[in-house]
Length: 174
Image (tube, rainbow, N blue to C red; front, side):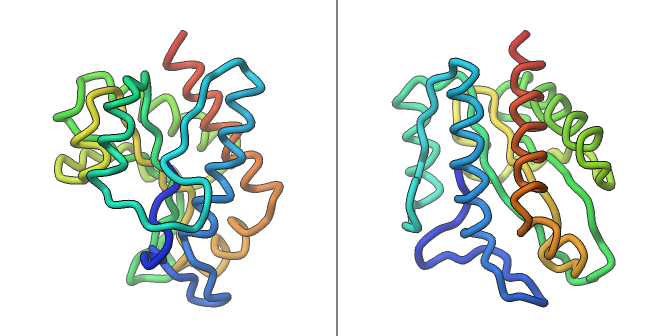
């Protein structure tokens, strides 16, 4: 689930003006390819720059009977010094969403050497609350931090992040 899209840009980079929706889509398509290379069947909530409501995203996953739901995002904060990765989950989806989130976070921190901002319980985020399968919302860096904003636009960084997410998913399923 590449976050945002269409009329919803998401976070906007302070230095370059990059839109979160662009990076979320780029990384989401990269993750799809990586997972398919491992034999997974992957469905995307969006594969172009289009707006899809949060409830529609969750409903898509539920109607497909998906085994997992991964929402791809980039963070922002009012303080430009804040940086790192975090993974959000809802306690209402399933008690295993916290484990999925931890597995993905551990891989991200290990592979990227990023600041570990932990797993964060977010009970009211629609896409991870309304899905009926283990669900995680992955924040791969801060667009409000100049260093991370530059970093997350590099293909090698996104490839490492996506590979870490893939490895976290595999760890969770093993």
